[in-house]
Figure 1: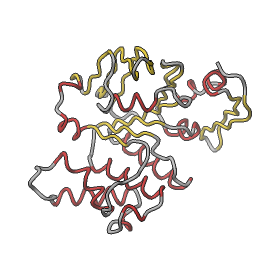
Figure 2 (figure 1 turned 45 degrees about the vertical axis):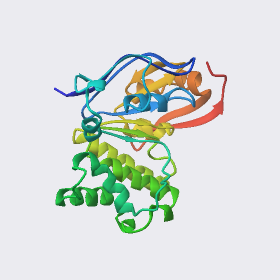
Figure 3 (figure 1 turned 180 degrees about the vertical axis):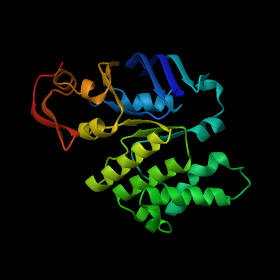
Length: 262
């Protein structure tokens, strides 16, 4: 029986007087790769930041491994949950290896340097994300897509049970998009729970075991990609007519024209 990593019950999120999400219920099990989709402003990033503990919920409860997430210390949470936010800017002129090593901080005592295990894990993360060749370079000398892969390597270095990734393939070329999504699939198959925001509906359909469609402050639909990515849902949420099909057994979604949403 799969382990339930995450349980959201009645979660509401907002800023000032504006509500972003209302009474959201959702769960995620170990080994799942769940994609969050929806139009701009639907609350995808806010949901991720709330789960990561960066944005307080107005109401409801989040449980991680059947414990209220607020009862778990920040350090313990940082060992079990990794958050890969949008953007990949670094404010420090440090090497790529140093950036990735930051993912090991929750596992180390503050006065100790990296162990052999830390070095091995960082080396593997660099290799997995195809950035080993940049290890000694300043992160500020890399392109946007290269930085994105470095930040993913940092998240993988945590070795989390749950990985939250907000638009992890934004800025990557098509080849590296496929490489990164294949890696996410492998990680989920090894037992890691993964929740990611995606705008590319074809990648979402191909790689995610389940999709969560946010619209009008709520979860409009959730389930298997072929059920969530219906013509009706695409028209209502994104205001598009789309060609939905398969090629070589892989699903695809091609927007064809605009239509009236809602």
